[in-house]
Image 1 (tube, helix red, strand yellow):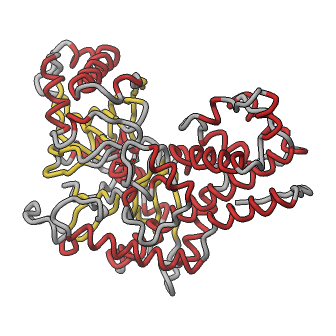
Image 2: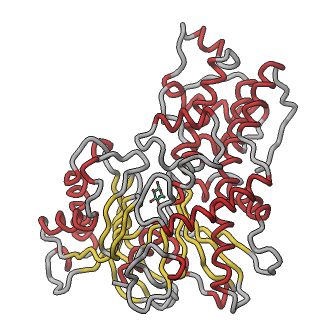
Image 3: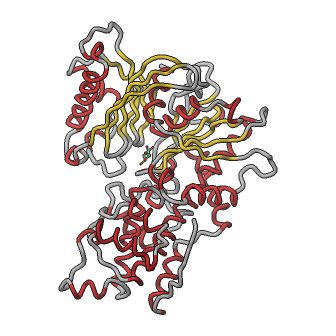
Length: 481
Ligand code: BGC
């Protein structure tokens, strides 16, 4: 990630404090190499452990047993719940790496994200699927079709999957908290609410968004043109996670694999890599952020990387400097002893704000001044903006470096599956951070090079933005039902 300092000296006391915080976020090359080794060990342990526990990376078998080749065909529905929006789409797979997609997006009301019963949320989802069919597929909506339309449900939370169309919620993440959903079958919950509404749709596949991303990118990728195999589907957005294809002998916890199956897509749930903090960097700021979350002690890797947390890490870091008398002192006095609530309350500093500050090279960081004022109602001095920019860059850089660890490790692990061809490796990725955060992808690539997973091989690794994973990918899961 580029750094452009334009004579940005700070008062000595502040400079020393900022350096000390930057150092806490600094990761060495040696660290990345060791963390990659530890990640691989955690993968194997997760693939062995018969029961889910906080200590193990979930490594969930998905019952998706093959990767698409672009020839799949037909019309399918997809529904996607993964964050603040619910998306419903219909996908017409053309069988030639292309597809047509219709979609509607519905905002999940905040009061349906916590403190309600599971059925209240799932009824809302079923009603939106019905509304989508009314608008785009009136034949299905009016029950004129004989066979139900098959739906792939992308549900981007940790799920213990026991079949392609069966899976119970392990725990909520990303701000959702509806306790009576935990341990219940997600497909049943959605299907029951569709049946009540007499919607002629059958939920045939449950997929994580990363599985969808892997399948969707593999469908769209034509290796004869790109000379690359798609080996990982991953998300770096509100949350983070990745999926890849594992050979069956490496999944000891899968006691009854489907007949003749040689391998299976694994949903790693790498957000939960190293929940016991054996190797992850752990600053006091990370600890504060974790304490503020509903899933405290879980998904600690995600809490250092993904969009939901970057702004929050910056916010608590800034408050710490304020409490030490180093920034916002004048503002505090002027306001008669307070700071703007958008900086004192958790979760109000969006990572999008960081992405503007990250690349601001305007004189005296005037652009950041405007953004901080408009979005956070936070007036700042030039020195304060320098501090904010340096911390933003330190936090984002650590996030990108950490993101490289699972990617490099998985490429290293799967390379043998492709030893008989000379194609490169591509990673399909989606999510606001990897797509829009300035320099994030380059910084990931730099760290992948440091880890150097393909030592001695001429093959290359590419990051490809893979859009519509959760729509097209879920449809592709439904084709395998
Ligand atoms: C969830 C994953 C999901 C990821 C990206 C995480 O918080 O646990 O299931 O794939 O976010 O959306």
